[in-house]
Image (cartoon, rainbow, N blue to C red; front, side, top):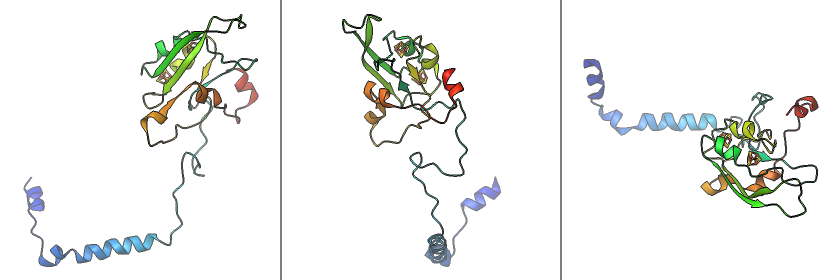
Length: 173
Ligand code: SF4
Ligand code: SF4
């Protein structure tokens, strides 16, 4: 305790109060680093070489899947949003076109707020239609505005699955 008090009440000398040696020390450190090879990478756009690849079951950014006819697979059942503990999925249902005889509903709005998401994967587990997946391997990019983290239906449909997974693994999903 006494030692701490001593440290706090250390009276700086006149030379120390000039800060000259410290300024030169700081400048020397800066100059030492200037010629060195830059290690900054634009992650996640560019992946540093020393990083290990993500594991097979890595949960990346969400995507919505399509059926063989290229239509959104989601049937707007709200199972995923009900299971979501972070309350970050917003769905507005609408009736399907008359010619869609295999289902009654589809999402008019499907949004995921990736700022609130905790990447638990419950939405994927809860979906009875295999309509939502987290197999894109995409790390959520860093944006400047909050609203850019809310991915809408079109964005979620545009995400592609991770292609380096073997076919057997993909077929089991
Ligand atoms: S991963 Fe979890 S928190 Fe994120 S949307 Fe799905 S259920 Fe919600
Ligand atoms: S993604 Fe799956 S669980 Fe969520 S509303 Fe669509 S069909 Fe239902």
